[in-house]
Image (cartoon, rainbow, N blue to C red):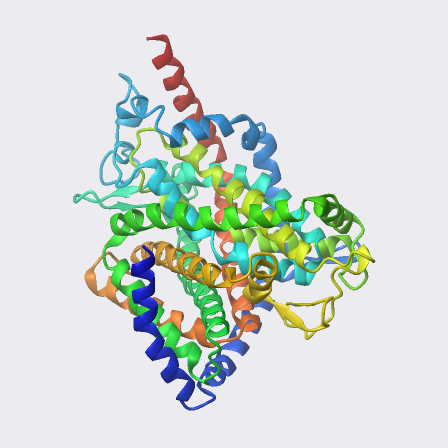
Length: 543
């Protein structure tokens, strides 16, 4: 593996060297064209609603209210269904899922839904673990490395607390949307699966007698999902990968970002040609490897700073309820935490349901319980670890309240206590790791590139599924989307973090509008599917 990675970097370095000699300003021109669009879109999606003395983005209210409702309605599945989720992923109930009981209504095709090609419930392309790996690769990525740094820069250590809360209640939302994703998927004659919110919004709402609303919401989601694949699932990833590579190799040329973007686009293009089976086979290998390296490094730093763990969590909890001056008060910190968590784990956005729809199972709820593990892995575990690493790095032992002085350059950066410089995003996380594990920035660079790579290939699948829903399933539509997707990799690598984060945040959060409305109509179906799955497991134990 090491030889393979070294050979890739050996091939890439000449292109990066050329970038330094290119005409200065190409990256700036790309950014100048992209920034106005990003700023306008962010302002539109984050339209606020006045509540008391606060102006709260409506999308955050919808996200939190929906997740809280599902958590209570399904009796806290993040805790009560956690063991079932682990057992399902490790294959304990594979035999149960291998066939239906006699008379199971899922065996019949609903004649009222002509979009159904055949009995989707017993089809699929990938295993539970592959579906989870693909979906996790789309969520566990730079949102956990750079995104946490942005959250702490904007909302202080207290934002971490609200990220964790959002992750816990988001597990319920993920359970609901991924169960529906499998239940209402389409399966082509060649076995190819087409699923996600586009399908459960159109087909599920048609069942409930809201055909017109369903079509509108499905179309809106598909359009926004294509945009999200270009933004959060693409441009943000290539941006932070380019930043880390440029920093590591000290590349200052004006076209550095463009050249790195072209290289990344080429590598991603090679993989996404193969479809979900190729993507799943790649991500099931990359995700455990890169997550293992990252978590291990986090644990080393956490145990190295063992005596400061209490102080760090003290900052997280105190900052969550009594935020420092200039952070916009309690609600301001809460909003930052929830926005960053939503960007990180995408619970409520519905994107992961597209990957989970491809699973091989007879019981949609089996994949729903598997999916609830995503926000736990992504936000509760990995984001918390990253936050601790950053807090340890910038901690001021003499004055804990000044651990994060803010107000730097207004571009999502933190002012360091050590020298007063401002830094943010992946650079902040990288410096935090290097301070304890010298030279780890090189390993982190590899992890960051792999995180970015796996996230981009997963999101290319999400966006392509939405594109096909809008424009048909022909080869021409397929090719056009993939070309546009690869172009945005280059744009993201060339633009600034501030521009990319505005566009990416808004694109991911915009998905919440159509998706959450649909979930609030369809959640009773999830209870029915859960009862079928649990009943099948109980019946198998009695045999």
